[in-house]
Length: 605
Image 1 (cartoon, rainbow, N blue to C red):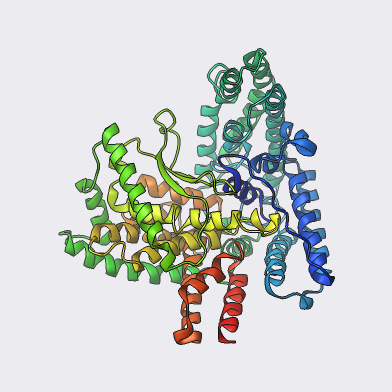
Image 2 (image 1 turned 30 degrees about the vertical axis):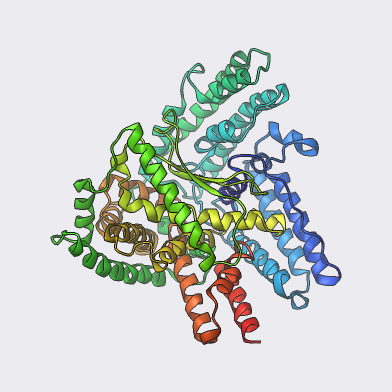
């Protein structure tokens, strides 16, 4: 199935801001469908048993699963081997079901499971490193390792309501230390295989670990428990208990990880691409398949990026001339547009409140027009809110999902620490991407569906991010940028970031570009500062293929829409097409094509 990063991301999509209830699919009657229904329930149970973090993320760490709240996952080499064996066994059990007896949604469910299990199993059999599946080659880097997510996980997802919750938190601090030591075991094994992160990834990890290595009285790992236990009136000296485990176990384990990375600094090279790893070219091809859920080759993805960039530049040139920016490349003109401070709201509480209010109005305008494009609308509403000033320095703009019953809205949290960072000309397209008809719309429909839970927690980035990018274009087609060239330039800028990702991810890992060439290329494409492009490229280096999922997904949806239009002519219905894409849940793009083909065949009948 999905790797740990994807599973945790799926858990967040379901329960970022609260507990999620479980809506189990009713077993279908008879033969292969009944077998598949049971298997999907079994896979969900097995997935929960393997990941206490996911149990907590879904709000299921109560009752029979309460013990999970005191645990973290098994990150040891033995644990990885067990998960690989479990994936192979799940694949065997799936293949034992007669696919030819399935049709409709059952066939979609089967094919979706098959892609995830088979792709992971193929990678497991070919590559000894990288955990389970392909896509995360390094155990520790500036974006990999328990140190990058456990502190936030404990703070935002481990709820504190009772004494037992507080005790489980302290237990999880000890578990955090165990996981870090198990990661050392894996990283040493990988180093023996010739798998060491690039030098900038090692340096970035060390910098972040040094920040995490704080005295207990100032560490969020301790203060998060203390503050929340006090707020709930839970008796006990939680500062003493948490600090004892933090000092005796967490800090020493963190120091051992730092010592390992200091060792690896002398062995790390500057080459950023995974081509340098054992069987590296094949590994990148496996990453691309897993992340784009297609059979596209690296060269095809690279060329797609170049072609899309060229088309976007041409449109941007026309728009820039309309607003008086006539000199320089498109990237240089985007840089000049930022520096012009156009559409920057006052950097005051009143200015920030006005920006949020204007975005909420934009959401309402889009919601009023959604029925022209969609038959099925989510129950959960959407609100745009400012990230609280107390946490905005370290937080990023993000979306939290609404409740399954629609009573709690989805929230698009926007970081407004400095309004100069968020000129309004690129805010509409971001809002359509994160909100409606993008992530909020798609995720809410999935949450409110009766899909089996294993389908609801399975994340396929090419589908999810592809839909959100498609939504940005859909907003343009609905006329939201009409008469507003700066808004359309914002839309094109975000599209250029995604086309630039196709070019630079394949450049790094397939064409063997240096980090520096990739950085300057990306900055030249979308006009972002070199420092920001550098952060992007360093992420792509450690998560190969993921950056390609966005634009590949969008262009696939557009191609399938054109396919349906050509096949159906006057019978094409945009609402029915969107139903075909959305109502079967997240899936590989290869399966999405089959779903659209089913729609075409049904519409022709």
